[in-house]
Image 1: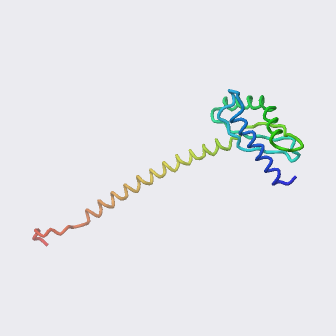
Image 2 (image 1 turned 180 degrees about the vertical axis):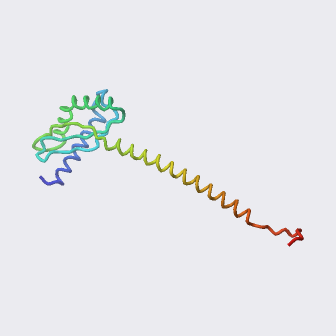
Image 3 (image 1 turned 180 degrees about the horizontal axis):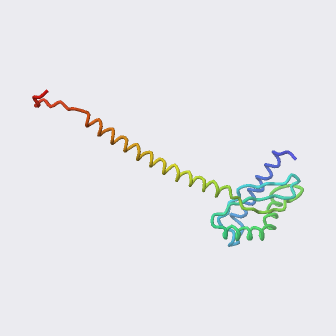
Length: 148
């Protein structure tokens, strides 16, 4: 199958699943969920829906259980809105990419924040010592001083 067509179908499935989760599912286990990607098989018989859940591992597992129990409803929405020969069977998995990138950003901010503050502190110390040295080495001419 054409990869462009497959990408379009995956995007359409992502949109249908996202809007259905957001507006139509009433399962209390499914909260703070973002559909990050959909990987559709070339034969269109299955699709892997990758989700990101705000919260801890317990919230993730509860959300996965809720989504798996809502799988049939989500597949029926896909069948109604997307015209394909087969309706893909959905499977859900947690996408840890977003959490990993947030963690990496936090680590980088901490590392850069510490090194930046250390560099700024070192720069201030160097500047203070330079000013002291320049002040000590300068002789100001006092017009009232007759020793000149």
